[in-house]
Length: 261
Image (cartoon, rainbow, N blue to C red; front, side, top):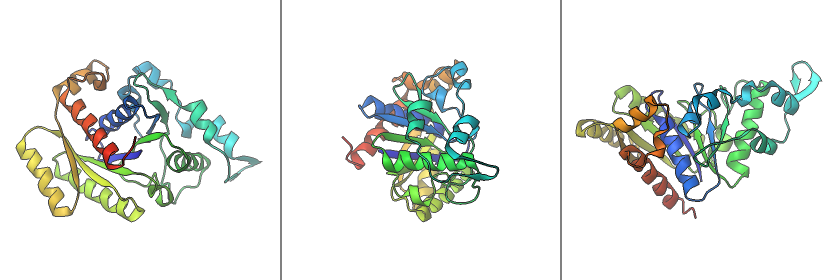
């Protein structure tokens, strides 16, 4: 089960990505979570403390690792072919929710553009995780799907596009949907998040209907999420929170759609 989660900054996609990862792990699937956001905070969502999260060195900032994979001994020239399976074993971080986490760090387009060494390592690692492994995989993206790239996107089972009722958020969701379609993704789902009332729900539903977006679920606004975040705790440990329950239902729905056992 390979899932990518995208959306405009500030719409709450990290909680949904973390909730899906937790859900897969709780159902017995070996699960890897990838934080590819330029402002990574998936670690705390998966139950690590702020202190523990700060100690994680992103892959793109790990010069020793990058050099060991790409260096040829000549300035400006690096290897294009190298193994990355050991990175998962050595650099993933176990979390209290049973999910192994890899923090990628800031990356450029995975399909084209920057060919610097750190991005070469990230490109290879993402392709390995998405294409060559059997683990459940949840990736918290920035807005857009360039990180995955055309060659890898076709192997992702689903892309969840998270949006709230703000029109700017919904317009970005449509843009991501169009990009993902071009990249070859097949299962594209809109998730309405932090929905406070029927007016907001209707706004999201109307936009989805007019623009051909398949709406998978509405995740309600829940004060319990805000309170847990204020305490520095992950909301995912509190099964009484309605939003957490809804995200777990999304996890179950994706498993059924993809007939994962």
